[in-house]
Image (cartoon, rainbow, N blue to C red; front, side, top):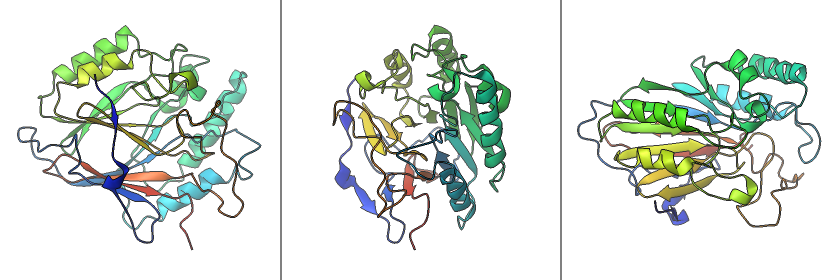
Length: 299
């Protein structure tokens, strides 16, 4: 399994948006001839809300999520669905407090105009009770679904405190993939990266390589994940991996400093480094345009 960064020059700036487009013609994207008719659509990825976090570096910890929700609700065209890729809440040892935070964040998410919303957990949600409370509020942690010619797979690499998918889930993934044609359009959602980005910082999945090996025979695979609180793009062979920014605080670039301490708040540019993204499927050609959007639209 090979791994190489995607050339940053392959990105172009969006005028007036402050984001970037990941064009569908980049390496890892191919024409899918036999996967059936695909329609154009787009979804929003939101990640790492950490509801319940309080203190530096975010002085607006209770206001950032509502502002982001307002920004999504203000999109000129509503997305087909919204995917939350984990860490909806911040870790607490108190099971009652954990559920209180989940109830609060679920109520806030309920104010989104789009009602087709899906979830996977992060380790802050699930590692202390193996996802029990998360499942009570948000449902299954591993599942798949089909939408407009694309097969979506949600994996749970956080409920196991060892940061592994586990043999049972890997068996489920193989069985799910066995039903797909080799040129099927496949999107995978995880919280942690499936490749070894920075294992010393817990930016890896212990058996993620096994999942990537299962995905490798399929020609058209893209992985969207969270956890690292920053935009990041990586290739493992022909499989593209895209990390999302967080909605609470940004973290440093992988391995750029001794510890993964949050980056300082910039009063001159509040909410910098935070955001969400929309992901547009281009229909007949497998690939996505990815637009990185800020928490609050620039004036």
